[in-house]
Length: 398
Image 1 (cartoon, rainbow, N blue to C red):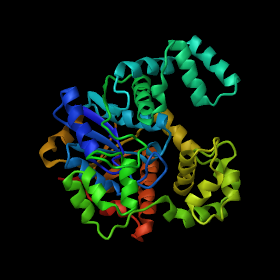
Image 2 (cartoon, one colour):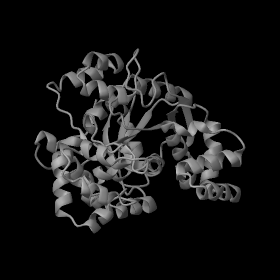
Image 3 (cartoon, one colour):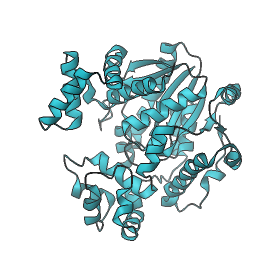
């Protein structure tokens, strides 16, 4: 059984190709996807909600879609990967994971991941040496790895390659028996804003969508996905700026100690944010304070965590205890028997109906599920939808 970790923000031709190639690479007939909910790892609301993205995935090769809980989905690469791999491991039925990477060579990743998982003395000494020279931690780590391995590893500068390493570290940490594979990403660069041909990055597609370049979007997403997007017209999708007033309210009614307890609020970021609380928008606020020390993505993530009230304690608890449940967002009718296999083999409760969830979970499980429910209400505020939207949405079945 193949497992894939993704955001599908939005689902595009490259994702469909990834599922097809991954099934072939792992000799799998079925695919279970772990997908972020309504907020992404970059610290933004997703272009389309998780239910629409679930339907897109199920129409294009996925058999079951599971939700990556909010606290993992909006975290740094290490925690994001750990939470997602843990879900695949806890299904009890996933045997392989296949991720896209710019490098495409699993041996390169395994070599680096093993060093970072075990941290041999030579690596620790090299890391200390480069940190003492004043290098940033990411740069010092790459230099320490290169000195330890005695070869160039600049492939770690690519974002999907970094995630690849984190997936392998997570497999090591969990002592999981899941077999990792990787396939090389096709054509489009992760950060590219340009659409040429029929495959583009999700970044480029979001850029085209927000600039009303719908003909370009149509070229690079499966037809069934574009049909779903067209059905949404007139388009009403959120950006982080839609939550500016919420952020201002929170900042003006919270004391600084509460803000310091929020995940990713480090190195005095809270002071810079509070100094710029009257900025016209969140984008404007970030532009005012971003620097080499405070990168754009780090600031986005920190600000989103303020809005969603994700604390350092929330992240730390899940890092130590991991997923207390697995939530199913949708499945294919023809693969429905896999849901029975999942329920029988999973190491934690399987949530298919929120109304029954409280009977299945302990207090901590309920706490994190409630965070999910509240975050969905916040996501839909830009559409002025009612509360408890999660309870109105049935499982997606295609």
